Image 1: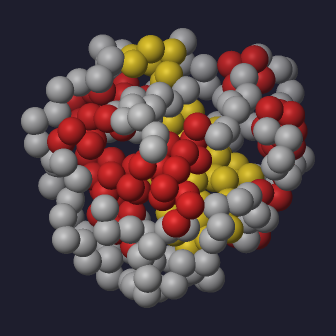
Image 2: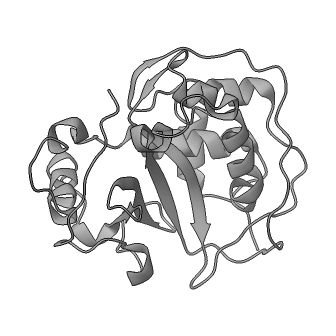
Image 3: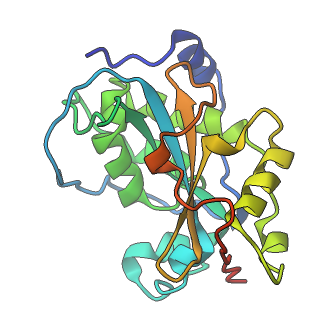
Length: 235
């Protein structure tokens, strides 16, 4: 399997500045001395890449029960900033399966993690996403992170704080807000993950091998348009 992303996208990535911001109300980059260790949680799968999923987590919901946890202090304590939609990861797909844990010549450097910490406010998660997913896209961690920044930077984020104040809110309303902010998208290209209590956890955006938006597989769409949801503001 070739671990090469689209050449023009890599060229664009390498021309980008080193820092990017998530949907952060504020963000203060912490000093990162070392890269957290990552343990493999499944088998190696070197498969041809047929598309990608960009997963965006809603940070207020994630931090709702984790404010005091040291492991999540950058994202949830408030000392480094307050966040909205953050990047969980960019995942290569391969039909009904997905590539993962591909062999890599090197891992990310502390400086590479710090450059992306305002986009994904967890050094451990950044290291994990590279090792599990990014290693199956490219041989260079910096390229993986820059491709993530390209995709994220091309998106306009809807006002989820405003939507959260509606008395009745559905997954269809959220998809419509996304389409209004991003006219090139379509509803079936946006997966919505809710927790068991019906609160928004994550958006999953589907891309083709050319990094253009495409319809999500049915199993990735998550909540149906008529399904009720709630959004925790956390502010």
